[in-house]
Image (cartoon, rainbow, N blue to C red):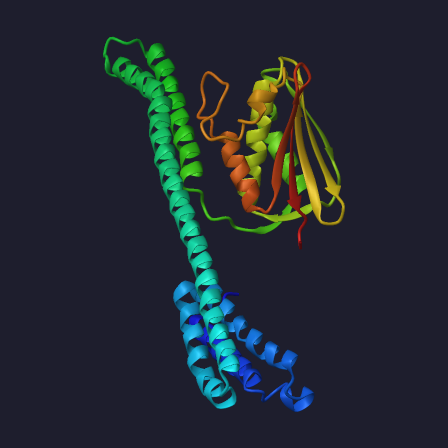
Length: 348
């Protein structure tokens, strides 16, 4: 924890008092007597508070401490060193105090200035990045809801046309409802990315969660003749937000289904990784992803699909990191892709 300014000043005052006591011979001389090496140590100890002041307060602080020490040693100089040689040595020592103060203080000030500029540059980059993300977000929303809105507009125009047959009206009602759900889903993805909800942590049974997600999507995947295979260890618990982890798993399964060939399978594995973490893996048997593309899959708005926001895996990664976990992806062309999530076990 960083020291407050008043505490730093108190420490400096104490160190100045101690070094001056040593300089005046109140500490070492009673033990070792007045010898040359003892006197040399007296002067060198005064460098310490000057250097500390430079680190804490820069050039101004080091010069202030050097001045205080110089003024405080003047009585010692003129009382104990009447001869010119001794006086000259003490004056040289004072010059060294100021030299060290200027050197260390200037270096620290320069370092602080460089660091401040780096922080300002970083803040500017972050602001630029945020503005870029806002632009991409706005463009993404416009692009993704444009087509559904056009479909809804067309369906409504047909529905209000009195000459439209009743059976056609039923069909276009279904189209309108489907497209409204699509718009709602798209906006939901953007909101999850731009304004994620606060997590509600609880004890989560991962086996039950995986089985629930698999059952939820089973009927939908059967239409594409895709099967889900599970290999789950018993009694694996984490501390997490059930709904968010459920959302993560649904997203990974649907991504795997999109990548799988017709008649393929999705493998879900759940196992312990030692005593402190668990691993949840989702694997498809699709065509795989090239290495150059693999590095981009977690980037916001990146997608290889003809439709989609490109936010799914970015949201997944964000959720997992907020659970103090990690996610990694492996892929081989012609064999498929595997995503592995590592999370702390409950109680860790």
